[in-house]
Length: 399
Image 1 (cartoon, rainbow, N blue to C red):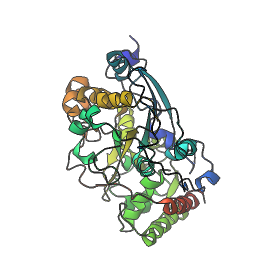
Image 2: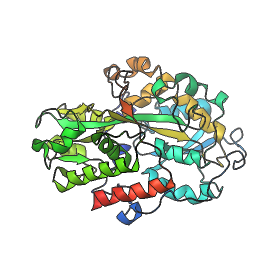
Image 3: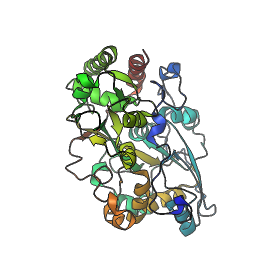
């Protein structure tokens, strides 16, 4: 039996979040420095009405489904007993699964002209992070889900992911996986780094830390450092946070904005602490138990990547069958055992007993309410703010 046919398997390939980490300040999706300064979200006149910009659903006679998701974000599709093939076998729906979402802004740039003009993108489902999901829902580019076709979503979604301001009843979105942004350090080289302020100021860390290239993650923490709230901040507070980031760069505290080998650098001591994503750290700990994840004093950034049905999708009912399937606790547990991010499905922790008992008590996959009590999200930005703040971020990170 091939190793990836065995359950549970642990992936060692590039993670979903790993694709966001470029060799410098620019994400690995291939965005240029100049592109980062473009008004990604300037789409005047592009708003649509999902009630009128919709296609006839062909799901009943065409048992197929086309999905765009992030790389390394599903258990192996070649495994005949994996979640992907089990879905196809049990439903009779053939899935064309594309791992072509490399970056939220890049994907937006690829589809905005079509969606903004009520034209199809030849996808029945796309998976995007909270802030981009909110943006597309706000523009009217996403179809509402038929509630009766996704009963498990509404029954089994964990409490911490309910009531989001941009989709309070989960009318348009279903979390695929969630994650936390915090701090990682290598205990073989330094003592615990307990706060983001420490990360930016401790002398033994100087020149030996990295920050993430994802603006909302890093700037959320910078806002916390200057006493502001990432979920509701003013323009003055934003510039206080940018100034604090510029100081960390100019003082030499920062080695770089995280490259795609930041955990490898952490493991071998090239860096000793960093801003990090929870799922990446779990994967690294399999090989190096000295790598630790810390809940910083400033709290944790909690985010989700969300399943969305775009306008003019022609197989919406099949997409809803996929959502409902992955909200079955046993299926969700099998997926979580592979990807190692926060499982959004209530009951999956109990199901994990039969899948991989070693993961049942891992708070980075199944955090309890106390663990999540001090998490935060990043404030939704309008078009002007997006253009302005992305430009500020580019100036700070590229120089």
